[in-house]
Length: 304
Image 1 (tube, rainbow, N blue to C red):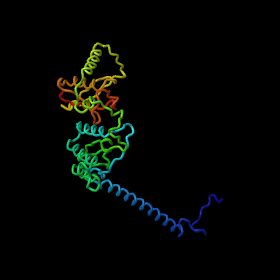
Image 2 (spheres, rainbow, N blue to C red; image 1 turned 30 degrees about the horizontal axis):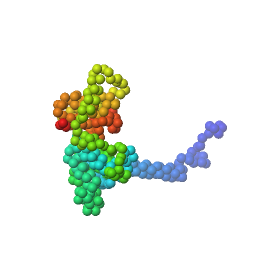
Image 3 (cartoon, one colour; image 1 turned 90 degrees about the vertical axis):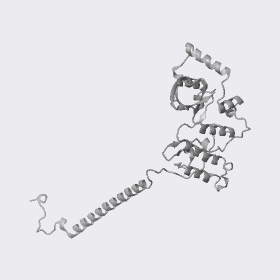
Image 4 (cartoon, rainbow, N blue to C red; image 1 turned 135 degrees about the vertical axis):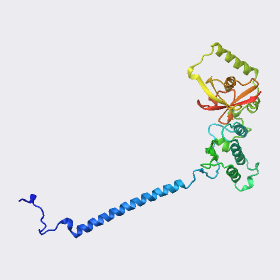
């Protein structure tokens, strides 16, 4: 028959190529190489998995990431800070803490006071200008710093988070001297007294609020639905939450009065509103002082 139908005969002059010694040797080498690669890949995978497990299991689950304390350096861009303003707002911040553990806030404040003024706190001689002393206070209270920077927050041993603003952690590099007049910080004597002590309302303020309330009750005040807002306030006296509605242009004094009426507090009490660690000025609106819709404010209850 033709060549297409022919096939090799076992008795022919050419041996079967699959049975040659060279073919068997080549096939054995390829199989050995493939097996070696598979074993190497499996070993690499097991090694990588073991390293990942070792890395994840290196820290116990009851431990938190804790980096050494380092100083925070910053410059103010949106506000000119004075020493008097820093001292006042830092004091207001720690006086209005209603969340977290009080003893942790006290330890954070003690550590920060060392960083603010190590000489006054007797920590200037520790060789680090107060840094080591502040670290010791944090360690004693079991406070951990994930980044080492207090301005990025701290955690207590229970995992509670304590946020701290940078103006609270360190003085800005462009701190303004107190004797320089700054428009943002220029407060009259009456404003300063009102901010620090809760102050008494003047007759003019009472008349203005009463007139506004009477206009609203009579339906003469024009209200735009887009300007209607609501805020949830947490009372410091009872830890109860109340929600009040107000206009975007309403001053903090008006909102505080509504909170007092909604909560049923006695007329002998006075409500001051605190937000983000500072007591708000009563002659400005919430929005003008940085409040954002949906955020909770603290309603601090004082005796008149």
